[in-house]
Length: 318
Length: 280
Image (cartoon, rainbow over all chains, first blue to last red; front, side, top):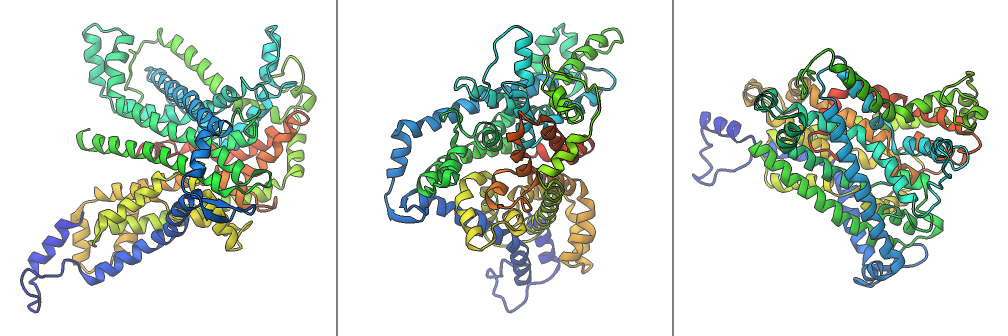
């Protein structure tokens, strides 16, 4: 990074005579010390709260534990095998996958749809954009408790609307069929403020002339969207899909507040599984919980790595 | 943000359906916010009536008084904001120092070290939560402010963001300042920092929002209502949903005010942070 700066100073000054040619010190000692001091605060925090727990999670996942959660003996992959073969535990993987698809895809599609509607050339469109970004201001807990009021089977607005239309009430969060989609709906609402802002930013980068040119060629509105806008928006769409996938994988607050993983495990995802196995009901099965932590780690890291790769490409060729 | 980048042609008459469409969409999206605010001043009789009431017919502040009785909301408000500000200060400072080293200084293993910073972005906090909980517990820090702030005082994403920004900083200014005998610290704080305000602001807002909204970690490391953050306080209200919905909605309204101010007024800075590779 600072190559040019260093080269310049070296040319202007002469190398100290005591240093043999070709063996000049590559780094300046004072500069090394400064760099070390500047990196130290971050590295210290990372060492304690990122790198150590990373290895500790893997370590715990390979060890059985006593009732206090402390590791007792090495069991290798046994707990992984249990996690993927025990039908009750295996369900966590399925629930997680279904939840991610039901949350991430609608969040991205609705966000892009809203961003497209906000491309309308009318006065005050920014006011609409600002208002539509409202869910972004809602934390997981705020979102969850508002929807808890909506979902209430007896007095909630959702069942009120159903009853007004002459339909039967629904146990939004207590019916095993509805619980996961209801939860996904809450999270989608929470996400669309973010996805529409990012999609809008992506649309701003598409030059006006492209629309004009396409329109002059007689292309209709839908054709312009499909043939011009969406292809040019691909990097943004990809970014959003990855971010939303990671975000859904990490969802915790909405599940903890609205369903507690129930009914009967219908909404227990990986992150919620970690919490339940390690901390809920007085159970401290840190070994089995760490297996889920490591599985989550692998999936999220893979997704983030993919995103970095594509982002780099965008930086270089974009 | 220009409104002129239009996908659709302007025309006074044709903009009417656009207004109508956008108004309907906005109403649907904003409804939970509307309901939280409107419901917070409705009586519980009205809130639980059938058909559901959407407008307050009589105005009451009872719910606000009740929520302040139900949880130590003011104390939790203070906790949330204090913790968020400490994390913002700490994370911005450590990121600034580290990003400076990565961009302006020469040292061995630079790329390897930077890769380690990137690793911290990729690894989800939920995967580390058991050992981190044990660390905090073993240090005797459960239910304290250090428990809520310490793990977040360094931020891989912040270093990444500032490094990107500093990389495009004109090298001539740096060289000229160094030639004139300007120390690294002075250059960083009196030249670089003022010129990097947009990036620092984006980072600060991002750190504030993510910390203020945190849920899993504060849930684990706090025990007493006095140390809980606002988010955990809100979740405690959930059980009152059938009996006292107005109280919940008053709590939500109070809790989201700072966030709504941030996202409505600093949208441009936020988008900058969002689109540079952040993880929400």
